[in-house]
Image 1: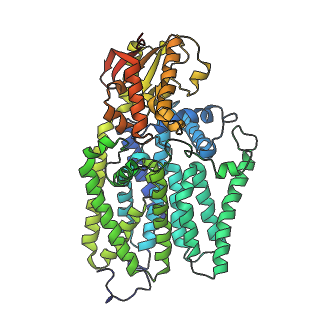
Image 2: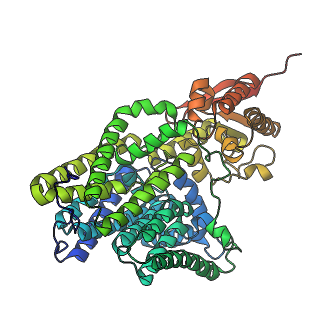
Image 3: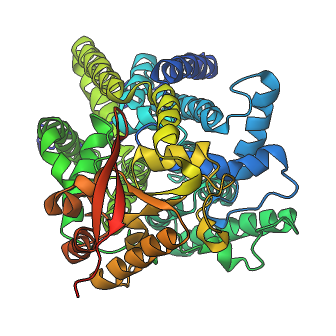
Amino acid sequence: MLASPLLPVPTTPTWQVSNGQGGSGGTLDAVLVWLLSFCGLVGLILWYDNAQGITGNGIFKALQLKPWVQTPATASLDASNYLYFPIVGRLCALLDVLGVFPGDPRRQMAVIHAASAAACLSVLYLFARRLTGDRAIAWLATLFHLAGGFFLNLAISNEDIMPSYTLMFAAMVLAVLWFVRPTVRRVAIVSAIFTLAWLFEWRLMFPTLPAMLLALAIASGRPLARLGWIATFLLTSVAVVAVLQLLWGSQPGNPYRLVDLVWTAKGVETGWAGFTAAKWWFLWAGISETLLGGRNLGDLASLPLYAREMGAATVVIVGLAVAALLLFWHNRSVPQTRILVAVFGGTFVAGEVMNVYSQPQDPQMQINVMPWLTIAAILLVAHAARTHRRAALSTFACVSAGILAYNVHALAATRGEDTRWRATLERIEQHVPPARSFLLVHGFEGLVSQTYYHWNGDWKFFDTLGPAPTPATKFKVLALVSGAVNRPRLTGPELAAELEQQILQAMALGYDVVAADVWNWSREKMESALSTVADKGKSDALYEMLHTKFTGTPVYVDPVAGPFVRLTPIAPRQ
């Protein structure tokens, strides 16, 4: 009955439990939140033994990070991760000195991300306490946010999004608190933090920028003042970028033009871009897995396996959304309500539009657009606590603990991958000698990321590759997704012909081309596995090429990596 016309219109938000904002000790509590959550996350990292977590992206970033650990003066900047590699590289060097996973940035990154996630929880604690004035609700809010599937997974893995997400979340909560009564100083500070966030990960700019500008556009004040605040926000962002670009000077990779930092076009001209019917299913998976499971479900055929999990999460998410909208409507006369909805709701809407165009199931694409879940939970619990405090807090605690337990249990399915893969690569090298072999793979599986890191991979190996054997170039991979991702304008037959030519070229140089499990896939399985980057026509063309141009001879079956098959060209009929 949140929107009942019989209820008086509030002048202060009904989620504010206490005007005292929870009493003293907030800063000390925030430090304690950081310490407890960091220690707990590090414990999970050690227990999980799987630094790459639910994606392999962090492993590729770890190799890119190594020069910033070892030789930062000559390391190359990356416009799309402008601050991430320099700062995390220096932190990895510090961990080397401290003896924390020395010489292994792949695992050091997970520790750094855990510290960043803990900082995010501290920011959330202070924000929840400021909004509600209730210490207990603020503590439970950190538990709820920590428990979320994607947050928990990304907090203990080497996926590179967490530092950027933490800074962006801090900018968003400051905007909610300050844009109710903006000043030039407040707007500039929020803009600077916002800019630092997307300089860690460029694409985080887009979901939140429209939301920030919307919040300023509807803030209290004269139209001319609102235009001035919007101009201040934009100019501050550009100024921060310009100053940092100037400070980097002649560092390798530093763009000459400012526009090359503001628009890096990351992922735009790739197979990830574009709207397809399948992406609506992946969008559902990404939104629901944000709360429960935390899995990166990039195969259409896998979605039915998690239907119950996704269904349960959907019920909770939709319930929170509906209840929160009713609460916001009841509090619509409160200026903070409009700003809060603009910042978190605007980020969600803009973010999901962008996600359904790109990678809607990917954890790092969802985490920064879904924090409204926690905000909605905080406000609803605080509203209920005004009349039913014990029941509201008990329910919040039980739900948060239950979600955390479920998601930790889900982690157990991929626990121990680091140890398993070290032994697996040793077995593979015995049966498929990397000096004289190419691997034909899907491209997104653990086999690719693990060989890339442990075999010191370089995607440009083909440019300078000589005849077999090449002991110095162990990483030699042909991936089904490579053409679809990097050359999206090619048709299915063109992609198939390109891959066939690469296979024959490798064979002409004296290498064995050994296919992983992809050789045994059915046509339907290949279509499903490629559905995030290629349509049915392209997957069919690749399938036809492989099974009409080559035969396969079993080589080895690994208990972790699966079967390996040596390809042989089929002689053309006379």
